[in-house]
Image 1 (tube, rainbow, N blue to C red):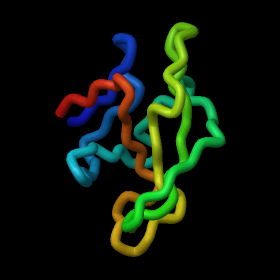
Image 2: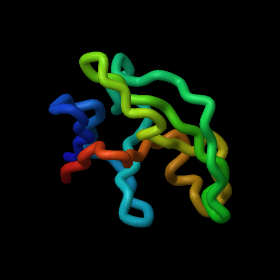
Image 3: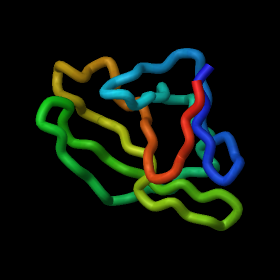
Image 4: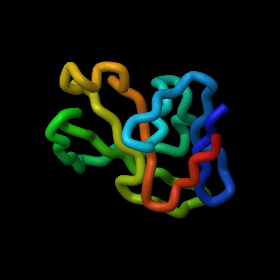
Length: 94
C-alpha cells in the first residue's frame, strides 16, 4: 500500500502503483478528489512528455503544483498515463 499525505491528511492511496525515477505514481481513481484543484501549470520531460499539475488543498492550506500527471505520455511512459505523483512536501509512504 502506498499513501500520499499532506498536512496529516491522506490524499491518495493504492496497492496498485508505478514507480518511475524514484517517484510513486498513483493510478487514476486512487486520489481523494476533494483535496485537488486544477492548475494551468505544465512542464516537459524529454522522455515522458508534457506534465500537467494540480494544487492540493487541505484545511484551507494550499500546496501549489504539488501533484503532476501525464495525460498524453510518450510511448516509453505509457504505464503512467493519468497516474499522479507528488513533490513539494507531500509525503509518500510505502
